[in-house]
Amino acid sequence: MTSLTVRNLTKSFGALKVTDDVSLEFVPGEIHAIIGPNGAGKTTLISQLSGQLRSDSGTVLVGERDVTRLPMSDRVKLGLARSFQITSVLPGFTALENVALAVQARNGSSFRFFRTVSDEAALNDAALVALREAGLDHRADITARSLSHGEHRRLELAIALATEPTILLLDEPLAGVGGEDAEAFVANLQKLKGRFTIVLIEHDMDAVFALADRVSVLVYGRIIATGTPEAVRSDPEVRAAYLGDEAGEVV
Amino acid sequence: MSDATAAPVSTARRPLAGRLKAALVLFAIFALMPPLAAVLNDPFYVLIGTRILAYAIAAMALDLILGYGAMVSFGHAAYLGFGAYAVAILSRHGVNDLILQILFAAGISAAFAFVTGAISLRTKGVYFIMITLAFGQMAFFFFISLSAYGGDDGVALAQRSTVLGMDLLKSDFGQYYVTLALLVGLFLLCHRIVGSRFGRVLTGIRENPTRMEAIGFSPFRYQLTAFIISGCITSVAGVVLANQAQFVSPAFMSWHRSGELIVMVVLGGVGTLAGPIAGAVAALMLEEWLGALSKHWKLFFGVFLVLMVLFSPRGITGLLEQLGLARKRQ
Image 1: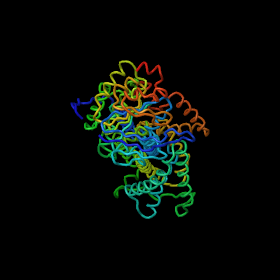
Image 2 (image 1 turned 30 degrees about the horizontal axis):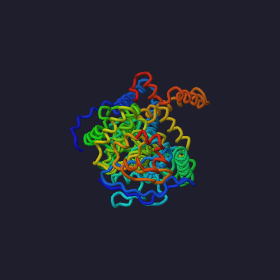
Image 3 (image 1 turned 120 degrees about the vertical axis):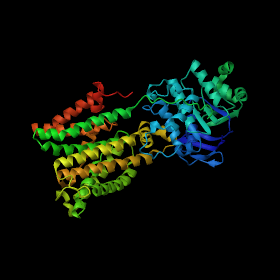
Image 4 (image 1 turned 135 degrees about the horizontal axis):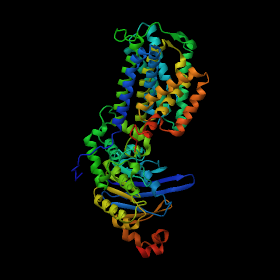
């Protein structure tokens, strides 16, 4: 487990400031949820943390290490893994192959040209463990293209777990998952708690309040509040900006 | 991780086996072709057959990057040219050994692929196609202006290559079987590469480059490596073609040739290795037959291509799948 520190991070698209001077400290082992209305810049922030997007200014630290200038592929090797809000897997590969490739990225050279990779037990076994943790091991041999939406969300999680992360950036893992599926998935995430530093973006407020140790609220690229779920829930500014009065009655 | 009681994984899906089987059937047919031509008393087919096998090598090599790496190189004829000129230049200086000529051709090709690939891979899609075409044309015009080796007119070869001092290529039969052996060997090489760790990364980049970066692979180095391997294998086809024609000219590397290689890959079925081998056979045999029927054969060939793309976008491989002769991809 490692801490993740964000200092004065900004990002603009043209005149639009999407990330506006964001500073956050993610403590090792906590689940830190980032919530906010649509278009608040949550996915942009995750993309800056993971290295998919370059930041205009500010710094990102993994532990003590400054990773602000590193590309996404190098940040993964330092233990910073992400999942995607819109499912991004290898559609022609089986679930197992998708995850085994993530294991391979951290396990020996990929400049090996002769040995048949599908016979490598070490890769397959580790991949199966990650699939089991995400609750998808029973579908290991199914092509990703043929999996359901809910299963895709689990595959996203399994791939991220297989990169042996210390920090997990989960971009709406529950997007589009409802009912019992969502409850089961929350239970899965609950089991991961404490093993990784988790940054969670989620619209499902039940999930957020069930999982998060701390919550930050992002509105128009700015963090307007950070605190325990209870503190954030009762913060008047948050209620006005985001949760709204009727939502306040529900939660 | 805690609960590592991993059950053995059943790898139910085995696309590798299907590819290998299809290729073995093709190779068996190829091996039987010369005796058949002898029975029919038409030895000309053996010479054409050698040409077909050479193009099969090139089409398969192109498939390695086009089909598995989603890199559409429109300049691959350059490597045919490097192979052909490796024979012409070395034999001029008294080096006639096939193995040395292949090594020389592969060395030149690797250097050219490294430099042009590193630049081309900074672009994507149609820009990649155009920039590889441009580099192919540069190679073409370089050999046109190389007057020491015939320039535009090309250069005739005094003799065919030898293999470790043996005149294996002297007869058309010998040359055919040496070419077949090269095709089989290089197919097995490509087959292993595609099924390896490297091959899985390459295919993954084709499927979703962003996802590959998110798990820690930077696509460039893998794509460039594949590009170089493909160029080297293609140059072997050029070495064979020079021997088959006993003549080398820049026409080997014209952009039409690059286009024909793409047609063979698409006609056979991209990303199948065995498919493009069949694609080379189909394209060149149609060229022979239609060419004998009419000098406007390219028109009919065009109609055929359009029909294939419309009704079987996955080429001959797709056609076999529809007929139930090959296992469908999931």
